[in-house]
Length: 172
Picture 1 (tube, helix red, strand yellow):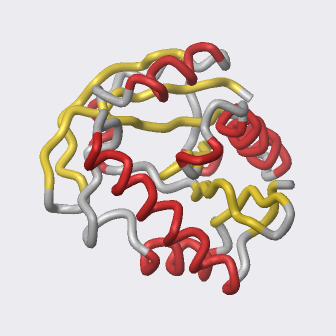
Picture 2: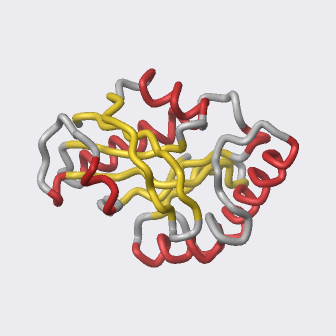
């Protein structure tokens, strides 16, 4: 089940982030995230308080998390989006991640479909996202779900790392 996150989910969400960091220490690296900087439990709490944090959960165990809101990073202005939309018509997927122990079960696809359905119910007409250029699973997943590659730009992510992010969009 995918549902709005609750305060009691924060520890499970932080555990997902830590499991991803642990896995990436062994390789391969897909996120370019930095342990202790992003994502953190504090980031999850901020999204929870904003009402934009969702979790996938099965049998009381949180297997995935996503922040779905309308916040487009300033670097999005450099992307040649092809689907016209006003600011209030855009939903943005942030930090969609699945616990590494649960990967390969199609859960990211379920989470993306949930985001699309939720955005539609909020009256959004387009959904956008960005992912690190070397995140091979995400860069395969989104086009397979009908997302169009819109371009790549350099982002100064959270003020601590410069990286090239691939941006995708999909009409809802």
